[in-house]
Length: 195
Image (cartoon, rainbow, N blue to C red; front, side, top):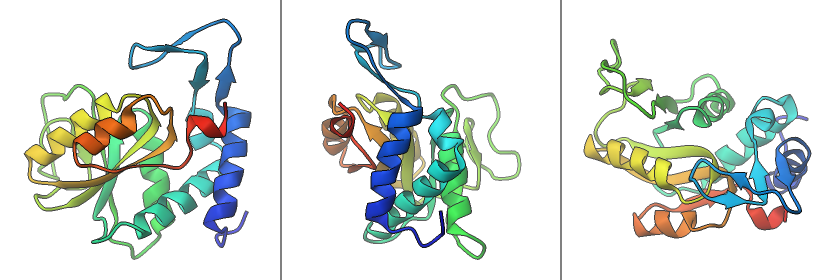
């Protein structure tokens, strides 16, 4: 796969890779999701994020989406564990000379912030500054609860959360929850692509 992959081709191929590496659908069994809900549909996107071709496709699509955000983006990142590889993919795809920075937010802050960055406890990586325009990255969105808590923590330090990009929107209320918080959810795919 070359660096010149078109977004439409990348999206179609990403759906194939997610279907192949991450998607399970049970006829009778219900999976318990991180949100506490149960569903016949389950996505384990870690193999997708760690697959070379899929990582390239994710980088293409994340940057295509970021390029469409009016006013630009300063920082990308999100909650451990799902956003850790996505953040690496996004900043690596930005390339040398880019000013796009990345961060990782712990679900439970440790008793220290960034020792050299000045970030508050639980936010690690690049320095996050008041006024930064941030895109939250998420692997799978169900209700949006965890990512919206992260957005609240970022807003509390003066950041502008301009969007959330998710690999898969399970179409179970996450989009509406983000809209209610004034943050567009921009999924790279949805459950409808797989079910």
